[in-house]
Amino acid sequence: MDRARWRTATRTVSRSAQSEELETLSTPAERSRAASDAARKKWKRVGEIARRAGGDDPVEPSEDEDAMSPEERRRYQRKKMEQRAEREKTAKMMDLQYFLEMVDSKHRYGSNLRSYHDHWKKSDTTENFFYWLDFGEGKEYEHPRVTRDRLDREQVRYLSREERMSYLAKIDSEGRLVWAKNGERINTTQEFKDSMNGIVPKDDPTSPSFGPYGQLVGGKGRPGSSDSSSSSSSSESEHSGIEGEHYVNEDLRDAKGLSKIKYVSAAALLNHLLRGSVKPHTWIFVADTSFRLYVGIKQSGAFQHSSFLHGARISAAGLIKIKDGQLRRLSPLSGHYRPPTKNFRAFVHSLRDNGVDMSRVSISRSYAILVGLETYVKTRRKAKSGVQHARNAETKIMRPEEYEKQKEAEKDTSKSAEQERRILAAKAEREEAERKEKSWKHRVWTRIRQRTGSLREGSPSQQQQQQQQQKKKHQKALSMPGQDVESSIPPAGKRDKVEPTC
Image (cartoon, rainbow, N blue to C red):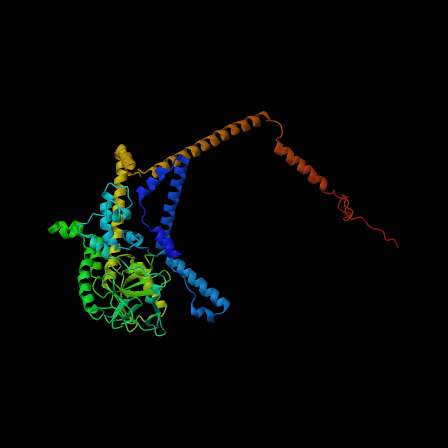
């Protein structure tokens, strides 16, 4: 059901076909109804994509919960919910530039799609991007740096919920990382390959493995399986060089001499670090919002960080090295998610809290570089904001006409924004009119009260009359001295002598 909804949401639809369908309708009411239905379907597709991007896998109950008492189980579940809510605040969705890859029904590599998307934005067309690319006006266009052959060949493999269980890692009693599917300790060496059954030994002939472009290679009963390893290893090194081009800054590379300085930025430095992560047989990891750990072998343009969770949000992602189940090295580098360093720190703390053996782990120097880059970006953003604020204040005081023109130019010129501004302006006018009306009524009633008060001057006011009436009632309720039969106290204040009766 979930996959069917996703296929419906990402199905390529021609905008011109929709327009022709509207033109065939005879009455304006029918056209309006059809346009509303089309808009509703588009919003449903957007909602499905947003749900997938921000979705999480359901948390299955732990085996330890069965041995707990009802009270312990409630405390344990409440603690897990609090921890999950805290992690969800910092969960990281896939970087915006890779959303094209997730939405694409073929999951073509996001960097390649972005090159064609830039050209589509400049073209004069009314067709949506994917229809333009595959069936419409842009189907014959070929980008100078990304050929059509490369665009169609590099398709990222997205795992289903059942498939990703083959990549799930767990912690054993000794703090070692093991595969959840069979309990074997994980080794991130070149003796393993990615296959239909997850990570298996290279000499395992029972299941086909995935080649550098995500194609199936070898396998039991398949011709040509004997030399598949040698051919795939040579194509892997060739493909890794191509993959490194995704992180090349063209302006920085083409600049000469001192002009290179102006193209040096935090993004350029991060891309330089990411180029080092495309070496053959690099192992990657992803932790979901419940800190479940998935480990696999990166295949550039075919198996990436986005593959594990089908493009959904994560808590942490990066590179990993494990020897005999013992964690040896971690790096926070991920081109698809680019998670902040605070997510990486939370992930390391979670490993330690869950009993992972951290005695021999080392953190990549890329972590320190990312911390420096984040600090630099924040400082630069604050300084830029302060300078811009000072300039705006100066312009507002010294050149008010120019300031108004700047504010007008910054406005959103879309129809929806203009309609929103009109609604807000009308609301402000109504509120101002109501405020003035209330103020006018208040002044009128104040004057009326003042005049009626001056006419009644010399006679007791209504409040005074009420006070006098209440005082009289109060006096009547009290008994006068000597009138209380129980006290028998006369007005003089002495008790009467009572003669004995016998």
